[in-house]
Length: 459
Image 1 (cartoon, rainbow, N blue to C red):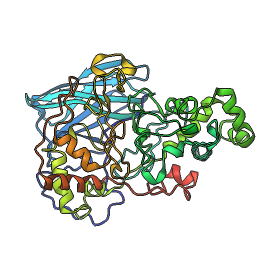
Image 2 (tube, rainbow, N blue to C red; image 1 turned 90 degrees about the horizontal axis):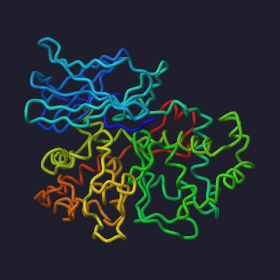
Image 3 (cartoon, one colour; image 1 turned 120 degrees about the vertical axis):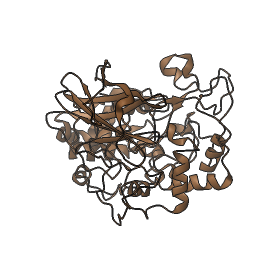
Image 4 (tube, one colour; image 1 turned 90 degrees about the vertical axis):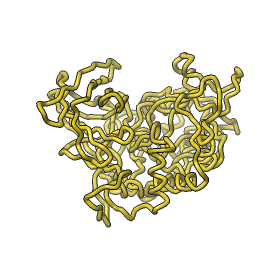
């Protein structure tokens, strides 16, 4: 299955102090759907709202920053449906009479699918690669996810979440038994107190060996369609395999030695959770089920977007305007996950030598991907220093100064990077805004499996 998305309904659940005036300020982005069952995604300063039906009918509306529906007469574009086998089918949108509704008709849908909108409104408003996740399963399960995240959590059909799997996965996540010298667990590098990242430039594995990349957070990875800085893993289950046997990370020799270690301690637990003995597949499935519960939302930003005008201070509101405007951060860091799920060459640590980390190129072999790395989520970014794929920038201020210069000038530098001419005050406002992306803290110790699945936790 494919994972990840950057669209989703934004609701007012759990928001107190909501007293938003009916007239919106020019920079306000409201993510509540205008139509029942709609999902909303930002595309620059505009919003696309989609409702997908099982029979293949897809309804879309375009609205501006004031959340006013726009006349779509000048819209021309398609809906692309990405199936689990990787095939993509395109269907054109057509206007319904003189209404503001656009319709695309596809074949009937079943199960989990990715819907992508590509198009233009007139000659100057592009909507490219705007993605929505939908589950048309016969028994669609919606999770009580935190404010700001999609309640339709992408869960693979062959690994449904249960309390037994989640609890087993949590214990495995924190157990150093998974490493060859009993010194490294998943939580060694993905530390809860650092938003499930770590405060080191690059990770340290067994016998003190070091890697070459910074540890990304596990938070909200349930929604990602590819994992790792180079996007080599299409699912949490597949991503979990590599660290177990990687010489630098956990260093296990083979599957047999791993399972032999786990049998005496966890044998009965695997029987309860999976109905059989531990296998490599069930080890990774259990850990993945736990990781899908690590959701960060209900941040000050989410509460502000849902109507609480007092949720973020004036400096952060100015920073928010800069983020989606002059500073151009929102071009790649798209809410609600604050990533475009793409790969960009920023010139970080790039010298052109053969020893440079070639990033996405290692996966695709395409020269355009040399030195390109995945856009990381910015949720909880104030807790995950140091930054960049190699941890080479210590502070968020340093990151903003790097982008203010237009990044590092190299032959492969992404065309989106340009000098920003931000003042010191504007950088301070951006820092204030980024601080509002901290989600509520996750209480790993006191969570119970049932409370995790029912959403009765505070991420």
